Image (cartoon, rainbow, N blue to C red; front, side, top):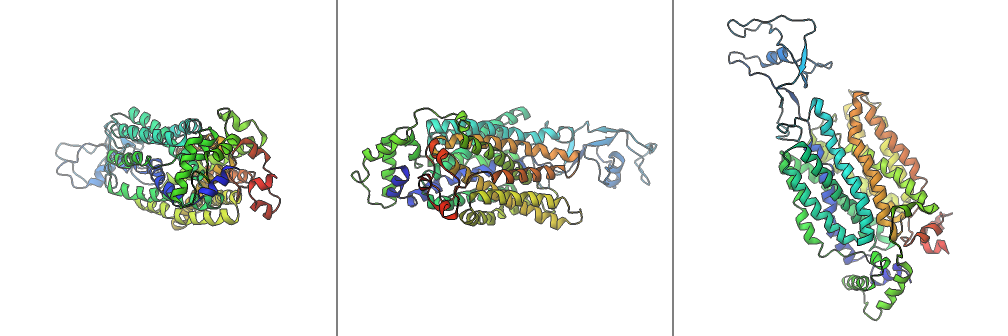
Length: 547
């Protein structure tokens, strides 16, 4: 008897599993609130050099700005430079005894030595406009670096949580993630310097990585084969809810410190909710903790209304299952590369996750140039994710995980590539393509979590998710920096996002299909598995294929 048979006895999809999905919805909502927070947190409003006050007898402010600020090649007033000496104010009298000055052919310009004045109509305060920080002009790289630091923290945290949750359990490490996120985010909101903020946001990213690594496997390991897809897509809609909620919260709270506080405080009820979250019985059996697994299985049966008692589901029967699945040696990241099939899966998943993250965050964090304000764009990007979930649900059930993963990445890449061909006066078409690309990239993200969780065996599932998330977050951390490539060529960032997505789409086709296959428990299960040779064989459970 294997774990799938035990799960069939206690119910593979019922009130117990639905309650589990509901309890784990909060981390799903919190993730986009933090991951996409730089859209509002690090927004750069219109700004110009701080200038001496306009004289009382001077009524033409536009002419005053013309006298102090040079124009950019596109005709707009400079945001980062001012004239060393005010230029002549034509047809204007500044006051008695004040000369017009001499209009030079090429007047000298200097940086903004007295700070900046910001347009606060959309954002009352961001880290870019924070007093003494002024992350604009020469310092704009530090503003972009905040997102890079954050995703670097997620990268490191993915490695740590992936390994530790396979060793010490999913539930315990989820508590660590909640508490760490709460404490570190509160410290970020209270930051008194850019350095303090950068450090605390990096550590917050490490803590939030626990949500990305733990939540999906903790749900899947309690589900039977038939309902993994619907539950996986259902739980991913909570991410979309978080994306749309961020647009609302950002619109209502325009100060970055209060905004950060608002998206952090829900961690407190999340900590309390862990009292009802069950540990993975699959993981407990691989660790030889039979008594705990037996208790959770009986609880699952009671909630699902299955007539299972101490006699029909004895601890001895559970012990026999545990004997075949117990892990003698602790898992390590080297185990992901020791055998041929696992090595192939790991390398391909690394490329796919890099492409998924790089294209998704490249699109998500760039909300400019679409003819909408920041709040409208964020809401639109959230709304388009809902039909993308339906696309994933239908596609993975009929076309399979592999083709869905490749197809959604291909769609994102083509949308980005086609957008490069749009001229500046075709703004509506450019906006439509950006929204389509966002929908495809979200569909690719949803598929990646489901697909990767099914590829790795239980004994290495968290470790494998940690490795792929590590590489994925590397892509996420580079995406904000890639936006700076527009200084080399305006279209270069979009070309990079689309090209990487196409590479990941091709790599996804090299992975084995997992549709209708039982979750592998051990490394041997993965190595014995062969690619299906027909649709009928593909629909068979994995153990039947192995026989």
